[in-house]
Image 1 (spheres, helix red, strand yellow):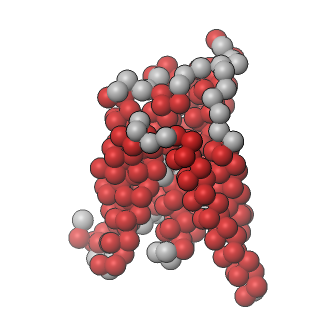
Image 2 (image 1 turned 30 degrees about the horizontal axis):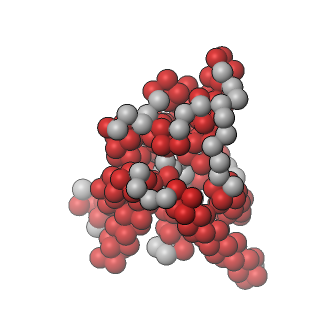
Length: 262
């Protein structure tokens, strides 16, 4: 354990803890892994390499998502059948995403992540509770495919994939928003385990940052779960969307500055 923390400064320890707390609150409130916040803060604030930020974020997501899933499950807000269908796809998707992480260009990762943030913000602002439109086998197959896509997002971008899973669950399972978020977090645990094991083998993870961020995020996640049942959802979603747009814009500006230098 000493070796893991031998090269980390006191400031970096504090930064890791703050990132974990913020990511945990978002994870608990919105059923996402928290990677949407962790990755850009690792890159822009803590100066971690882009690829390493994605892999480290996914590792930190694991305990945060687990805490969130426990919090929602305690209130019976997890659909375990839907969780199983999504997990079938997400575990394999995460492995494929980690493989892509080592193959795609740095600029693709940067632009791809910024685009993901913008699209996520738009979806949240345009958030609604559509009626269930799929049933039976079609619904199960749909969730497997969505799970795979969410897993690829996890492995490649270091995010949980909850942004796509939550609306998909409402469409395919007809469940309420809180149950969709709890189910999403349960699935993220599986994809995070799969992707993190693969990343550890490849040496992609900054273990000190991941451990500190993940542990700090656990109690914050329980706070987020509590807030999700108390805070007006429309206001919370708009606020979260604004955060995503701000982070994405900073990412794009950073890419432009990098291109100008070259």
